[in-house]
Amino acid sequence: MEKTSWLNNIFLVMEDITNKVMKSKYNPFYYHGALPQFIMYILFLSGLLLFAYYVPTIDNAYNSKNLVNAYTSVDYITEQIPFGAVIRAAHRYAGDAMVIFIVLHAIRVWATDRFRQYRWVQWISGVVLFLMVMFIGQTGYYLIWDERSLLLTRMTVSALAAIPFCGEFLSHWFLNGRTISNLTLSNFLFIHIGLSFSLMFALWIHYVRMTRPVITPPPALNYALLGMVFILVYLFPLTETKMANMATQPTMSEVDVIFLWPYQLLAAVGEYPFWIIMLLLLIGLCVIPGNIYGAKPVEAAEVVNNKCVGCRLCSLDCPYQAIEMVPAPADSRFKLLATVKAQRCSGCGVCVGACAFDAIDLPNLEDAQVTARIKELVEAS
Amino acid sequence: MAEEKTIITLICERAAEVDSVMNENDTLKDQPNVKVIKFPCSGMIQPLMVEAALKAGASGVVVCGCQIGDCYFREGNRMIKERLLGGRPPGLKANTDRRRVLALWLSRKQTDRFLSQTKEFVSFVSSLEDSGAKAAVPEKAPPKVEKVEKTKKAEKVEEKATEKAEATEKAESSDKDKE
Image (tube, rainbow over all chains, first blue to last red; front, side):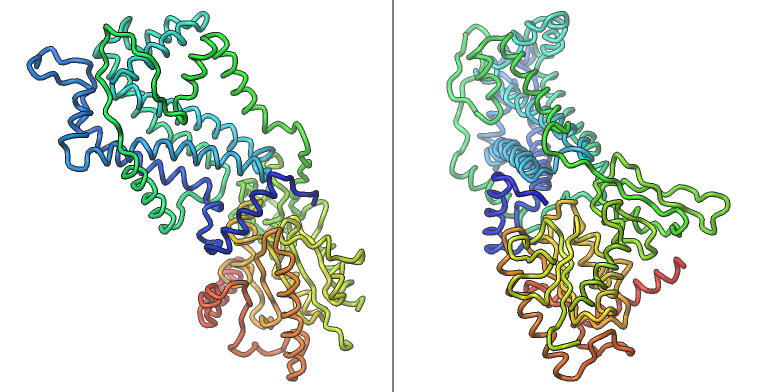
């Protein structure tokens, strides 16, 4: 075992402290992946309540006396609906919390070296999930239809239009037409909700290589998290904004750094450099799991075919779905035979521990060697 | 066996850091009767290995994995914990003297805790032998006081002897089914 990196050491020290404060069962560091999942449920529920009253238009021609549009419906939710302001603010802050927890999740996975080789599917799908969450959050900001929404929409259109070849198509898709219209907001609402449900599919890919993924934190942590969101809501209620007016040119004022940093970047460097930076970031994130540095090659477990009885214990216990039970050859006394998918194997040896028949081995540490070593050590005294 | 009680430690190489407190011949510096075997993950430890060590004449076996919840390979430490407690096949044989098995779940920074717990365990095992119990695997099932010592008191409550006995029986019956 090589030395632990300094980043890993920081986490080890922090986790040691949290383990002393709360038991390891409640250590939030051990649920870093499950926490964003729980926040997603908060977002789904609060979003459902908001959706009940939200009107995705920029004006309503049939009801011109009292203007009904996206902005006034959000205003109605905030001002008139009991606890509407609380739900709306909870939806906003839970979204911010989700991004923060996802980033912490990625940092811990990075620090503890749990992201590459046999885990590359999780990493790449994680990058995609992060992009989806960012875009969902940004469309959430368009939906309010205040001055900031108008500005963000215009910035997005200019950024999309700058993309060579498909720029025009993308900006027309984004606006759902050539200009900002009522259809634009229904498109935004569709992106916001449709992508949110697509998260479920991406999460399935994220979990598919993991046996028994940890997706639910203990209830105590959930309550604490929910409490934190409501404390934020109480401390920082959402401030009132001005309705978007298409005739004006609003400018960037206060900006949510967590979701809207790409827009700050866009405003600072312009369209082309923005896309180049984003593309480089994306490629960088996707290339990371390649064995660029310091990865130990995995020596996959090997099944001793004539000893395997086909009991499935190793296949059930494998944490990475690396063992598949196939029909045993015709001359076998048993029905099934375990086979190792080498590229999925982490070489952890959990299958060795699961086998009561010595039928699976790590090539660099066979269980017969271990037993012999145990005897040797006992007899040496 | 002489005065020295041989203790075999089966430890995950990512759990409590023992390199700095070990001699070259796999023994602990200040407790040379404690012998250490390292594994890539505590999940690799077979209950058979624990039994083999006791059968070969070791006075006790320490199994050490990472903090529950923090396995590098996701769930290896949880697996061996459940196997030792009898909740997951393959388990320990019913006639194994479970008083001689100590399970510790320690993170990389908890070397001191590992040493102090091992020391305590050695004296506990010696007291067993002084009181006349046999060192090797007893022929009959051990008395009901069987327990796997844990790092945390709360976890001790969980594993009542009766529950465990039931679980072990289940594990065994499922073993038989397979054969």
